[in-house]
Image (cartoon, rainbow, N blue to C red):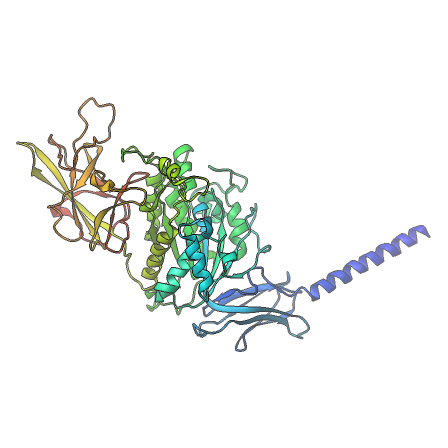
Length: 577
């Protein structure tokens, strides 16, 4: 009898569990965690919207009164529809997004849902850097409170995972206000304002910003195993490559759950951790550039393509590939030891990573914003340090002027959206001639041609004053030695052409192989070999840069030097080995 009672009890418990499961299955119609009240839905002809319900359940999804799509859940309970929102007017008022079962007995409805542009912002601490910590934070927040803002934000919770996650929880969309914007990414938010206020190319009133960032993290943590494999990297998620953060764990937990959302653009600010990887660990030059390109391609494969009705020229030509997300990155700012010797300011790691970042410009719809000249003295906006203390400890890794960076990201975004080439100065060619200098000796003159160099001039960086009077970001390779070179005043007579005069080299037997500082009027006083290469901004913390009339800084480069007769006059080149 006791045994029979146990069996009956077991059957009752089993039946109860089954009833609970069945009841749960009939009431678990839900949207994925990325969808919620106050969100922005992309404007596209095929917006993915997804969620869960009981298996084999017909589901109807509706945006407002006129846009709808139907599907049936898969065996695992997942469902996905694609909504055509491309016809929604730019100034259309927010509406509802709802899902219901065919019988209508279960309905889930989201409110205050707008249609517009949705952007993913990712990277490490300079992307994470909050509005409340940036220069002008009080004015930024006052502007947020004063305007009828159309910006909405969502922050992905910081977490790690050994395998790709599909669900997203612990977060919610929020309409921009002082309280919600203050802790949010300054670069992300200010770029959205820049586009809304100054660039009609965005063609949206509402902007959704998804922030997914973690300070101090290398690019490998943000790469899927597929991307790591493409880049020739280790794919073991338990591996700590060159930092405490394992490979792929941030992609798995903070990017993978967002798939396959239709982001219009991705903003990326990362690389400082990989400078350390190159400088202090067994990483090789070139690794970052390969990894960065692989990550961009993989992320684009992860997310739905933006609308084919985009204003980007590349998507309107018959026979061209499907549209891709705009990918915009910040080329790293100056930081490190800003002493008076520009050649010895840092190891080669930081300028090397900058150049490797720029290799991504070879991919379609990729743009950059230079932060080279925006380096601050050590964390200058920290409330824990006085202005004098900050000035005396140069090299802060977190530039405080995020508004300037956001402005440049906005210009790069607008260039890509309009199908234009970059508006930043780009070196296109370099050639050399010889010219008599002191007595019967011969010197070397290197001419560098730039595109987008209207009203260009040498200007001081944010952390320096009057530095261009004796500093130079240009170097010429002579006899295998990089030698500082000044821009010749009278020689640079045409717009976009800068003529460089190498400075005096160190005497034979010197303990250092770098160039000797001297006055700008100095020239080589021995007959050198022909110049072989020229480079710009190959310092960790340059104090003087080349900027055009639109306050856009020239892209760092290394160019082979030719004779004038052999000079290529084609399109811009970022770097050469």
